[in-house]
Length: 213
Image (cartoon, rainbow, N blue to C red):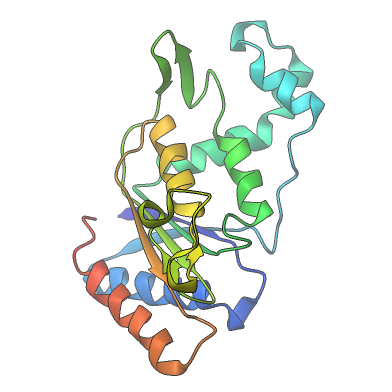
């Protein structure tokens, strides 16, 4: 049976547009065949932000770590193992201030680790994880411009649209770990009228039919 790691982020529970979209996508996947969902709800169980002990332990080569440092990294190891063992990953999140909610950034900081998910080389960081499909469902209250359209930070936002820094950041994060099959679905205008919200959900249905997983 295939397994899907679902990283749920929104604190709004049943009122969350990203959670509703994730439910729709998972239901569609399960209609194709059996899927085991491993859900990590960052709103229900927030992760601690890295502290000095974590940073020191993570930078230490594995052969030189002591038992206390191994204990400090135990949660990080568990989160990385969830990612490694999953056949695919789904992240459903709202956009907060054009980027990631802090609880999602904390998850990223636990899984992007030297000696564990990447190594540094003379040519830059080299990912250590095998490629797998990753889907980002990003719920936005208004309209969002493609980052390529607003690359000039000194220029105006296109037609009043907000910028999306979350998608290119997460794409780069997964590439750093060796995972390149990353796709993002923007759920735009979630706080606008019903027809605009429905248009985003319809677009999600069309996208998931072609998601290669």
